Length: 166
Image 1 (cartoon, one colour):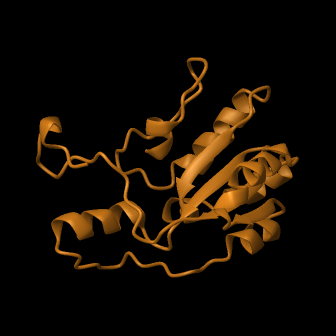
Image 2: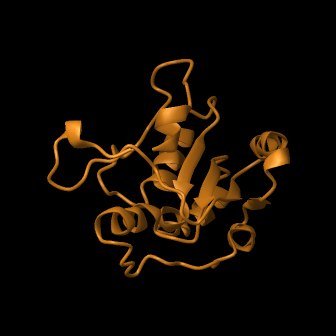
């Protein structure tokens, strides 16, 4: 959702998303398909840590078949959108959303034959992103974000679009 709001695409047909339909895990397989279909266009997946864990095993396919997808994980240690719903509509009664600090996505990427990078310093973020994009083959970039980071706008359950929060 962040990418949809803040990234401006120079050409049409450069954006694939699940439409916010609750398809956690969509990003990596969709990115793989895009990278195979258009090997001439760099493929970047922006995903959450919970979503990425749904299909991490696909990194083996990326490494084996040299699919050069670049995965940027917004890692807040939560199932972020579910936590956000619980925060805003359920008085912060969190249930089954805290994922803690595991797994170590850098080591996980390396275990599957991809390159793993962790970004924690805002002052070098742009240069670090460029380095990740220039790295050959599949790359997983663990970007640590604030644990309570929310994504807006969102529409409460049963509400109309004119009642969106954010």
